Amino acid sequence: MDNRDGCGQVGSGEWEARADLVVVGSGVAGLTAALRARELGLRVLVVTKGAADGGNTRWAQGGVAVVLGDTPDDSVHRHVEDTLVAGGGLCDPDATARIIADGPGAVARLRERGAVFDTGSGGRLARTREGGHTAFRVVHAGGDATGAEVERALLAASRDGLVPMLEHHVAVDTLRTPAGEVAGLRVLDGDGVPGVLIAPAVLLATGGLGQLYQATSNPEVATADGVAIALRAGAPVMDLEFVQFHPTVLYTGHGARGRCPLVTEAVRGEGAVLIDSRGARVMDGVHPLGDLAPRDVVSAAITRRLADLGDDHVFLDATHLDRPTFSRRFPTVLAACLAAGVDPVVAPIPVSPAAHFACGGVVSTVDGRTRVPGLYAAGEVARTGLHGANRLASNSLLEGLVVGTRAAEAVAADLAVGVLTERRLAACQPVTTAPVADRDTLQRVMSRYAGIGRDAEGLAVVGSVLDVSAVDSALTTRRLVEDAAMTLTARALIAAAAARTESRGCQVRTDHPTTDPALTHGLTVRLTPSGQPMLDRPTHPVRGAA
Ligand code: SIN
Image (tube, rainbow, N blue to C red):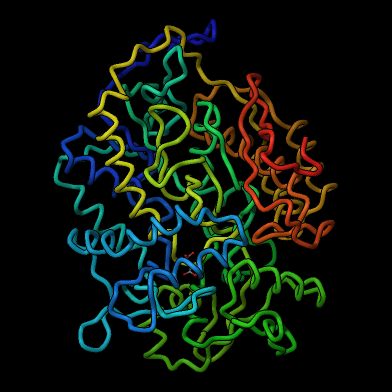
């Protein structure tokens, strides 16, 4: 790839491949899309920057929230209502209803592909409850290993040679036509050798952004790559300020870094309660659902209690569960606790909130279409309107299954009607150069100033630190690609967080502690021609927006 004049020619990558659809990411959304695309006769190619099973999906514990029609006290309508309540007024009700209505079919297809869910009496699927759900509707596998089972089944179904997968290949940027349509992807292989994948459709299924923070439940691959690729392709992102912190991540000591083990909310679904260092209940008097309040409410309550007591963790007391029950229902949590020297059957588990899920992302329809022709998104990277200001627990595997399927169908339909015609690539495909900040510095300032409890001054500090520390770099290694994605996404996130001068859902502003009804709409960020993240002019006035 020639970057001496900043203008590499397509085909000047050292290698090239072609497909109808390139899927970036091998988690639940990506694999579901790839399998459906193959069923529809598309030539599909999956690109993933780590090993095929290295993404976030396998770490999901709780399960898949779905109403299968065999629980008389529950309904799809009630699931939709719970989702809208958790989302703090920012869900798209139509998208929410459509995704949730597709849930039973999506779970049935997943079971046909070999996923095995836990059963209860009479062979019926077992159900648990998580925060914000008013019914037991979360189906699970392997006790608390639902994501691992979903990933296993989808990977097994993909390994018949018909879903080629490029592992250890990092997506750098889209290839575009002179009109700005997406027509392929620039990638680096495991040795950093550049290549191009020519395709009329690229589906981003790159997962989340937990690595923007020092402590997260996400694996190290969760570096916001898809958000950055989409922004650079001209697609808007929305709701990025709503980063969900999981209330109960295992506390392993002061200054924990990187991926921290999750203690699934389903433990509270089975009766565990949060207590502070004095033994007082954390959720008493906070919310009618108590310990099973929506996740944003629980994380904020823990954060307040920690500040009041000067502590750095609280405890999850699950000692009412006997050992056989705990090890059958929560084998993953048990193993993590024991490895950390805590026996949850005899002692409360030390926990604290950590970055967990991006409620916002690339603006997409429920069919995965973004605003840029040829570019699609599904899963955590996408903002479909299902999550609003705070995702309801276990709605994410559901979304990945539903939107992954629908996105593949949308690509097939768009190809069939000629929307994605053979595209002439722009002669000049500049090698991507982007500001890259030091990762450690970025994680520190994001954790300090852009976690739970933000204010205008702190967000401005993040902006200044990123401006000062970022250096323009050609994205020639996986590390640089990731760090550039985190730098850009952090800047977009803080722009939205600063403009949202209120507290709502996962955004807790200490300088604006109440919810402002005038801000009951999403904030959209896109890049200026010079590459700066900028808020779109809001439909309604947004106080404090640039
Ligand atoms: C959990 O099991 O608590 C996490 C599940 C989710 O984030 O949906």
